[in-house]
Length: 193
Ligand code: ADP
Image (cartoon, rainbow, N blue to C red; front, side, top):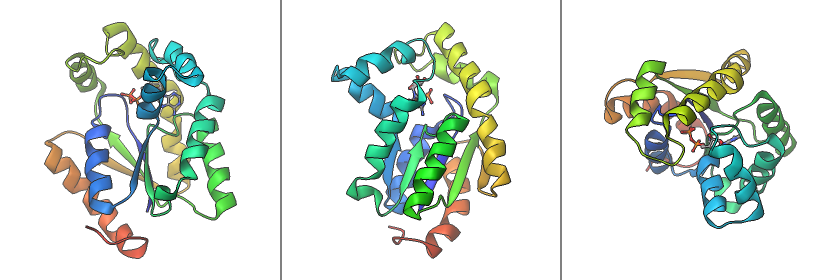
């Protein structure tokens, strides 16, 4: 199963992503985690990415695309994957479509985790990551609204979008996600564990 997971910062994507990859036995590809690992390892890409991340801005498409393309080629992605935090711009979505079309491995579904903006700000303020300072949070929410929200329409037109209500307990939200994914998992790929 090949899944794209979209949602604003603070929506709880990371938590749900971990549950999803566990249940369906697929790889978890978080571009945020990849960039933070590159930053901590002080690689050239990591140092470059950090300049954008610490300002709450998106890292340039060409940098992200290189990282993702490489990762999608690894063996553990053959059984399927959950893309978490990618694509985040229309250019990234188009590039992803092209990559997948070339391989003959289209996406199965795009999940949107929807949470009202007031709630997001509150959740993020309590988290304490380096890019969770109020000005940076605000900038990340702006980046989401301006650059990532247009993807919802893009995937809606392709009949791939499924919106999940992101308010409630972790368990309740995961139940909603399973309702969408379980029927898809029956048709494609590995068995539910
Ligand atoms: P969040 O969803 O909470 O903002 P992430 O861990 O997904 O957190 O991303 C953290 C930062 O990494 C983003 O603010 C951005 O600077 C950078 N980043 C992650 N994924 C992408 C992407 N696909 N395109 C551009 N920048 C990205």
